Amino acid sequence: MAEVDHRVQEIARRIKKMKIRGAGRIARSAAKALLVTAQQSKAKDPSALYCELEASARLLLSTRPTAVSLPNSIRYVMLKVREAQKSSMELEDLRQLTIATANKFIQSSARAIERIGEIGAKRIEDGDTIMTYCNSAAVTAILKAAFEQGKRLQVFVCETRPRFQGRVTAKTLGSIGIPTSLIVDGAIRFFMTKVDKAIVGADAVAANGAVVNKIGTSMVALAAHESRALFFVAAETYKFSPETMLGQLVEIEERDSSEVISVRGLKKMLNTTVRNPAFDVTPPEYVDLIVTEKGIIPPQAAIMVIQEEFGSIAAEELMEYQTCRLVDED
Ligand code: RUB
Image (cartoon, rainbow, N blue to C red):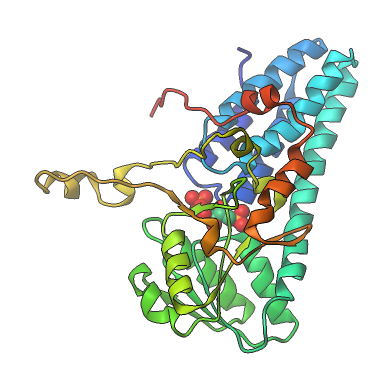
């Protein structure tokens, strides 16, 4: 396997350590890493460049298992590059094609978030009270667009233990000028009675419309269901998982116990281990609609999005670029 450029290794490390986080940002950073690989490559022929890109792709795929935006962004670049390499493209052309394709993904991802903001804002009413969970650029885009249209909003943001991404959301919404209340996750049901709509992002949307998002999201959905509040998901189409159409399950990442309690603190507890899954699955029955950049769909239509976006990719190519686990070196 070719050696991976140190800048790409650094991007992979930052994704793994959650310095780069959120499914959309992870996907754009992976595309950027492939772009950097092409830019920095000293390869002497197209197949050597392709090998370097493959090595970068494998490392990136090993960073975080749940966000399917990651393999989707890598497939977007790599399948195009592979086709070109097979058709004997010259080295310099292959390099430029890689850079252009990665840039195209990055730009269309940023544009998708803007469109989700515009489309989703139409479903927000003046005076709405909204609950959100974790930190999602797509959700923020909707709330920002609705607020900028002059709609009065009140937002409850859940802290989102153990990494407190809700604090980031509260800070962002507050700085835009949206009246924001930061609440502990245990207060979700307590405040849900005041909420009109809960809106969350997604790390993956399965073919059956189930939504994978930050651990605790399904509790928000359950409480919203009980209170008859609407439950919206904001997800770019590259977060839909084509693998689930082949019967694959989305892997739920389980993270280190030290995110929940210090190693010293845990040592003082007898017969206690920590479980720390990073994501959970909200069944489609609890999802009222999914806002994508192509329009609003019911969760039952997720399979059509997958067919439209990824239907042309052969099953073996899908299986080839999947998240994987490397032996953890740290
Ligand atoms: C982030 C998370 C976000 C989704 C969507 O988890 O669950 O809700 O990734 O975010 P983590 P976005 O912090 O573990 O990456 O809309 O920004 O893609």
